[in-house]
Length: 637
Ligand code: BES
Ligand code: ZN
Image 1: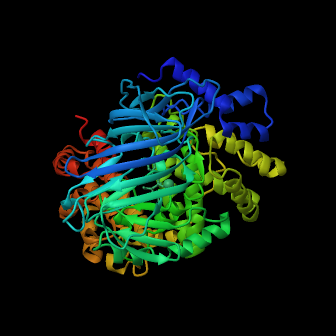
Image 2 (image 1 turned 45 degrees about the vertical axis):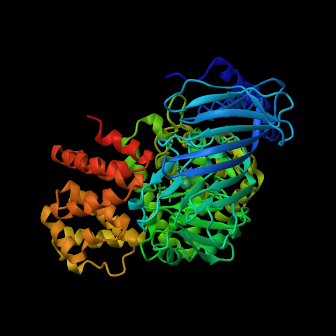
């Protein structure tokens, strides 16, 4: 695959030498020259064309009109730039994918602009194209006039039929990992940190929200302004537009959703303020001001996305009993791990997600108790095991090599669940008190910086391992980060509540107890999920009917229980659940929930036909990210 021209490669080498972050790293880490070189080259971002060694964008100001008819954003993007290298003549190289560029202008004072030349390179299917803009030595501002394409991966345009209200269209963005470039021309690397401002023009009756300070407006007027004063990586810029209502949750938190959903959401997320305080107690102040949650229509391809000040979330976690709110603790936790301390490249993604999963479970423990956190840890360990059984070695490495690959290839559960086990081993070895103090120091030290796995490793040595070498000897750190599989000493989460579920399940499976006598009355969602996973390989076909009659599983409104049940239904050809399966796949677009169902379906020829028939109806409603994942399963032949 075509990658980079040689001068971009040279640029990357220079970037390493002049990067301000690696500068601070070097100062605190006495290392040999060869170690240094290895550490520095691990900063190279293989997924951006930006010439960070010469020019860095510091601020982005957008002025965009949302055109629902044409499904495009159109307007301008003003970039405030700073020269960071010796080459004062170097052009500004941006990332752009599926964008139409009309004009580039430059200015020294941000007031009077003159037109300048630009060129768009050939487009790589994964990376898009470099957009090279000629800029004078004195230029501080660059203005790009452009529009996005209806096929932009980073945007989903929903018809009214795909919303809860059915009256108005809806738009949302999803920029992580490298889709910001499909709706904004910018340096799309997580090593860049920018502040941003935006003016968004929409149809008058709709509300726009962004991952920034949202201006308070008592009436919708179709003209909204935003600003984010804290520097973030570009993948955290986010926008949504729709018929949105708001309910406050606490002093500094609230929820946005369509009017018919907002009350339910406000109930489900009523612990948000408590989660914030619990996290602050453990890891230091919440540094982003407000924390709001936006509940999207069900085609949102993820469970949640940690856009700063405004988590984007799937409505499928509105179970009515707060049983799936660990997703909020996860996205909130990213306000420390991910948004404050950011992975420098997509190979370091586990620093975002492994740390966040660790924090997520600590928050769940603080609010709902150890047992609930342990149940979720066990389910996570099961997810990990499934991947370890299926993956090639190269995809089982925390610091995954993504050179020449799509960063999506690294976005599995592995960085989450293997990462969290490493942190758990550190906690268990050094003790909670010490490890909590370590983490708090880590967030302070690297606040508003982007770091690599090697940076973490150096910091960990200096602030934890090297202080207690006898304990450190118990941590096979290199193996954790650079080898496939799990170290033999990996912690094993255990749940008593699950052990009870297994005992009861076994008695029922063996015919010693009828289904109605299963002690399910107080089972949590997690216990149900565990029960269904546990019985899945051991069932007799008639037992599906018994279970369904006893517990109405086919009708469950809980998206996680439904996922497990429908997987079983497919595996055992339990036809009564097929209509529910179809409805699920036609309404929910969350990749993690639909992918396993299609995977289960295509295991048999009959199932494959069913998969194709359902997907033919469902595809156009899915987000491009989910479409790409399901295409691989269903459209393969
Ligand atoms: N940042 C991720 C979502 C993401 C990952 C988007 C990679 C694009 C690329 C988010 O924080 C996340 O992990 N979401 C999970 C939910 C979480 C509770 C594990 C999801 O969406 O399933
Ligand atoms: Zn996450």
